[in-house]
Image (cartoon, rainbow, N blue to C red; front, side):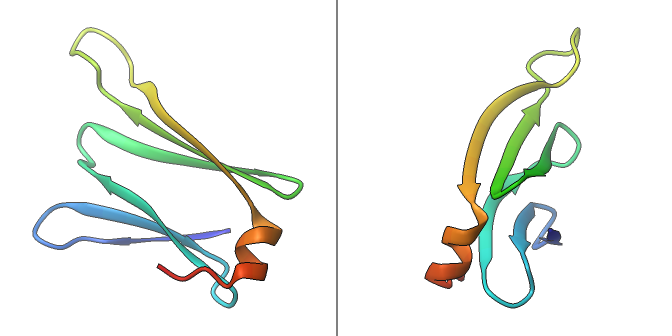
Length: 79
């Protein structure tokens, strides 16, 4: 799993890729208040977005997405 970040005008955009078969746009985020966490288990890729809900608590999961790595590779998905 390889991730990279594009930073146009202060807004971060994350992508995940295997550098050969696919590149998936994950989303934009404010890196002061949000972050993405990635984990792989077998053929499953889990992407969770965390965000500051309020100033009194830790970041909480606000979005969860699951992809099948074999499916991303077989479709040659490039975004």
